[in-house]
Length: 113
Length: 116
Image (tube, rainbow over all chains, first blue to last red; front, top):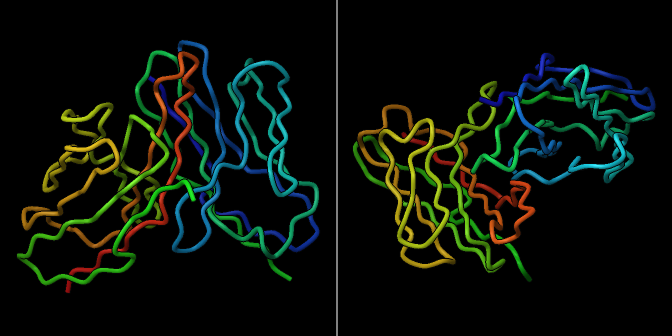
């Protein structure tokens, strides 16, 4: 069975500082990995995804993530955050032999001025 | 515009009443999903449907019902049997016709249900 762990439920950071949101997964087969962002009272939007190929994936709004197979991680990073990045971020995993996406419990990023 | 429309955005209901949340999509996606979101618990899958006239229970189906009579529509009914219905409900779709289907989901804006 697949699972996703987001160890940090909340990450406070000051504006223009770098940030890393951690995501670890478990799976016995090759995986696809996703990061979604959710702004208050809205649905989820796709930030970026890893399907295959280069392990460094660039997404929208200046975010990027690196797939590390040996550490089973897919951490999300941004070198300099803005107030507008305040939101909830969800990591998710799927594979060819599953019929649904498995989500982590989310990390709330709070950016302070 | 192509997309997923959930309605109503906000809904209030008295205890003991059933309520139906609408989800309509024009993305021509085969699969549709309903998630429930509570603070600190992430997204939990209620029901999903891979094809018209067929659906499967997710992790927390008790107290909910769905139908899939049309490809475009996947309404969710929150019944009086659901003990704690106050939550944010999200509808999502995915295309499973692509043999390289990755499971990527596309979400609606959500419906917030409050039981008074």
